[in-house]
Length: 183
Image (tube, rainbow, N blue to C red; front, side):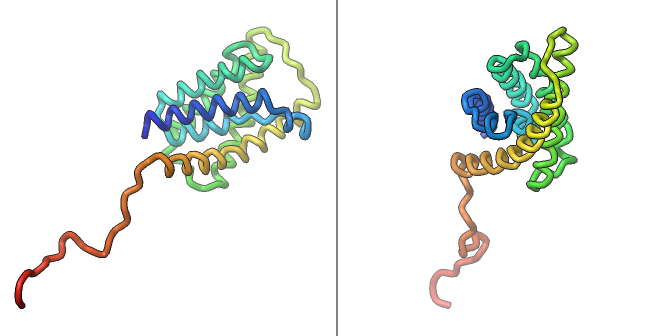
């Protein structure tokens, strides 16, 4: 399921970026757009290998930048760093608890816009910053934190649907001796 899992992660990244670009409900309701990619990168780093992390960061960052006003490739380094840190520390992190998943997603969603802003300022771009940016950042932190446990739930259900589940243990034990004939 490794290659299928990686393809599904890329498909969800594409759909998440497309949803962010086409659906303006969060933007109109909250005054900010929620970014789903940092939470997805946390999931990818904790559950897949490094090739899938690199591919998801690269493709997801380019897709995100193509729909936003960011220079092309400005989001890739921050997403790659989030995914690689999650991949590197996956043995140490408790990734099966929703509270921990929310925390990791919120930290990643807090880091990603700041790192992208750092990249943009270093390449000479002039992003619009103001007091409203602080509200947008807080909404992104909360939204990304809430999206991360949903990623784990979604992919757990997909995994159950597509991967063969072993049969439950039956009452017959294979090491039991069967005597034939009269006793």
